[in-house]
Image (tube, rainbow, N blue to C red):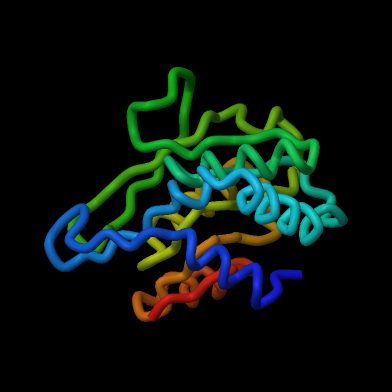
Amino acid sequence: MFSQKLKAQLHEAIREVPDYPKAGVLFRDITPLINHPALFSKLIDTLKVRYQHHSIDFVVGIEARGFILGAALAYALGVGFVPVRKKGKLPFKTLEVSYQLEYGAGSVEMHTDAFKEIKDAHVLLVDDLIATGGTALASLELIERLQAKCLEACFLINLKELGGLEKMSEKVNTFSILEYS
């Protein structure tokens, strides 16, 4: 599925930006990847093959880069897309979950009608990167509070040393394409 060649191409397309958003952080910027039409298409097509037989009703994408990957994958799978946004960014009735970050606290929200009242909707959670797992775990809690079932949490990048993927895998099946130490 994700051949070593494809993984190498994806890795090569991700720009590393030192000291962003603060000193000591090495930011993994996916904008060169999503700006490469053939490689971005190959990424989405390969993810589509992975998930096309999983009876997914919705792809849930985490703000903001998870929107890019998640919406493209939802389109490829022919399913709905649901955004998880930072507090105060959604215009309708929402559920909120707060969580701790490595440098503070955060909150994410989802519309209360995100899954169109489909009981036990099957969803795929998608984001570009998992670090400590706080945002992803909060997003998973929102999915569960809306009585949907997360079949898997998928990440383009796992920052292995921060342990977020391991925390997520205690609660749901996980998949990451690239790992960084």
